[in-house]
Length: 432
Image (cartoon, rainbow, N blue to C red):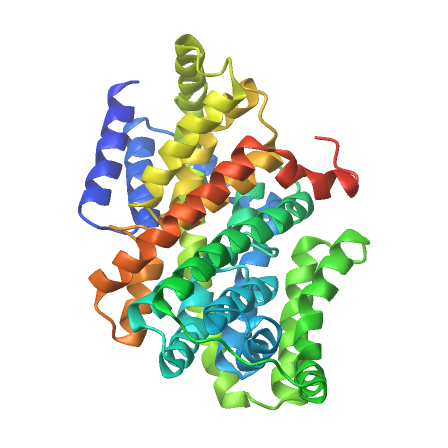
């Protein structure tokens, strides 16, 4: 690399070490490179405009953020919790299993781990503590189960990955279904084991009439992910349009059907969603410039050549193992969107050279980064649940680390067995 490239890299690293947002660091370092290389600003503007114009799938991001915020502000998540309690509550450690199943259902409308932790997570912890569960354990279950949010469709990280890799958002969503079930099963296995040791309470079975009443009250919400997935895979609407459909559906439920949100509350939700979408959009914009520098310096090709020279692409399993380790480490320190936007463009040539399917790789990467959101020192999910429940952070992470072991087991399963990701997409016509 030339002097300008080294200065670009140095500015980015300094920004990271000083704690600046990744979008800002990517933007400032790339602007410095452009000035030093005396690149025409019209070229830069063309890059930005073309990238935003052609990646229309990014419209799904603010829409999914809005639907998640709307669900959290209304009583929709409470109704989901009651339904999950009726289904799996009678198991040993009942409400812990309920927490996990509730996250699976919530994931079908939100696509965001943070929305799950900050919204239903706090309510679930209160319910578990009241039932007799240890508070740190309750927090750990909420943080770990929120990992399901971006694995089970829809998924905001998968939308971003699709933009970077050119993969089909629809097939990525389908690819996350079975891994989501595997991950939930691993988490529930640990809950079952630890609940037996600690004698955590068991819920009661609902009477048939009572269960039907709960089902009737929850049914409109349960239909949201069904409408979304059927609409996408029957071709009625695209994944981007599906995000708008979910928003409209959530609005109808909140404003008209259940009347749990008024116009004043709706304005606050919109403002909250705009702020979150603005931060995400700025990060993506900075990544477009950052990617331009990467491409101009031919860094992805050089990284691929390095992997080739070391023989790491001779085996898809070895390549995936090394990349898994990389993302597990990165996830402990770096935000999910930043990891996707910075690292994926660099290693995509390596992935292709090793013959790894891009849909399989995308689901593996997203799960990898979700584990990072629960892992210290970054551990954003752990920090959030500790803050909203006023629980000592150290106690939360001591419980959470045991769940992380089982999450890594799920990651290993879907990494070693690609069919766990690709089976459902192939049934839907995927030929990758």
